[in-house]
Amino acid sequence: MSLTSALLLDLFLVICCTGLLGRYAKLTALHPGSAYLLFHVLAVTSRAYFILAGSPTLFTAWGPGVIPLSNAEIALALNLADLALVSMTAAWIKAASNEQPRHGVPAIARRGSSAAMLSPKIIRKVSAIALPIGVAALIYFAYVPTVGAYGVGRIDLGDWNSSSWTMIAQSWPGMVLLSLIYYYGFRRLYVVPLCIYLLIIAVQGFSRFRLVIPLIYLVIVWLSRTCRKWPPLWMCGIGFVILIAIFPLKGIGRMVQSGAPISDIQEAVVDSFTDVTEGRASDQLVLDEFACTVSQVDDSHRYFYGSLYYPLLTLPIPRQFWWDKPLVNEYQYELSSPSRPMASSGMVPTLHGESYANFGPFGIIIISFAAAYWLGRFYFSAMRNSYFSVHRFIYIVIACNLVQVFRDGLISLVMFTVVNMMPLVAIAILSYIAFRRNKAQAVLRPQFVSGHARGVTQSSV
Image (cartoon, rainbow, N blue to C red; front, side):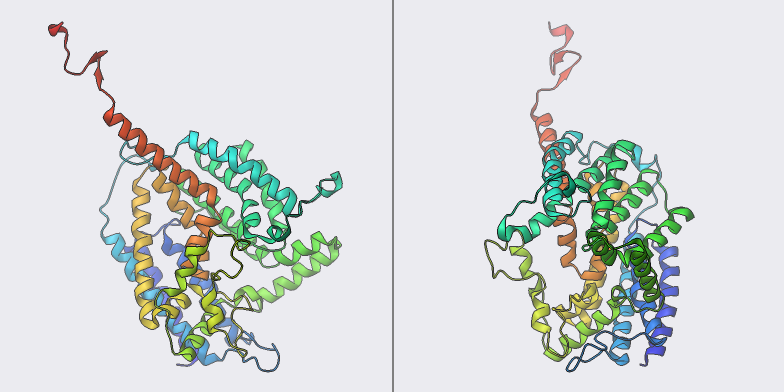
């Protein structure tokens, strides 16, 4: 199939699946289907259009020996992405069909005794531990404007300076503030320092997800607290502006750190905007990277059958203790070749590329359906529970990371929730344990009625 025909089919399927999800899947902004539709349109449909409009494909002008992606490879990837879209649409409709209409008070007001609830005591304890560690990590391992001017030096920990653990800890102040906002609301006491933290993160020159994910989290929390299905138009407008500003953020951060003049920064922003409107930005090559993954898997004549997830077992072990421990993207190095340097170029496989690497086209159908159905069931289950329940809280933690999961694969479900949002996951786990322990103690504790032990009445005295 030609790329033109594949794009026309994709447009038809996007319209049909959007209509079906809106009609039968009980779609809202918090539903995982909304995040996936947005991802598909921005990363798949628009990229195919830009290629037809003349945008170069991945590896173009990389030099001798490196083969650019062909339109035929892009068309095949587009067809496979559409196959996943249809499979996920069916899964979300199936998940919604199992839900019975429910009526009652808004979820934020329900506090059922059967569901584990967030503990404010646990939130305070986790915050008391994570906040000072996170602030210290920011001061000593991140670029914080004006801090150096006051004589604050950096700690030399040798190889640990480049450890991912020092990077993770830098996010903890933001995670603490996000947990406080979730429980206590958008109070100025928490919102102002969070804005300062996000500004610091924005000028780091890397890891833009540390800015994007908290912003998505805040939107989802606001929608959930206010019991809204969709954000207002003004919020959508701000979101679009932030989306455009995200593209040049790496370059802006490096220029700010190097003391570049404002005029140079403005020029860089204009150039980045031009690249985005022409489909030439590196962040717009997700479809190309998916297509490259499919081609490399086909050329290797092998599937991984889930073995690519094994490195997650060694994830907590610092590389300083195990220098040659398996990389999380180890399979990409196995698939890379001099003509298609996947791993060294920092490619993202997407959820569908990862599924294809596991089981081929069959994997795209089955894994897409299973992941979508689980997310759909999780969504409806979370919405049935109180806003203050652990269930709703952990769903929102996952929901704000869904775009990363669709972009990077199921491995990111662990990387971006359990690892990068560690304080929030700790709050959820510890709150659940505390709730179950208190419930067990309540069952064992002697029951009293009107000041008298159960079984003792006034007449028996």
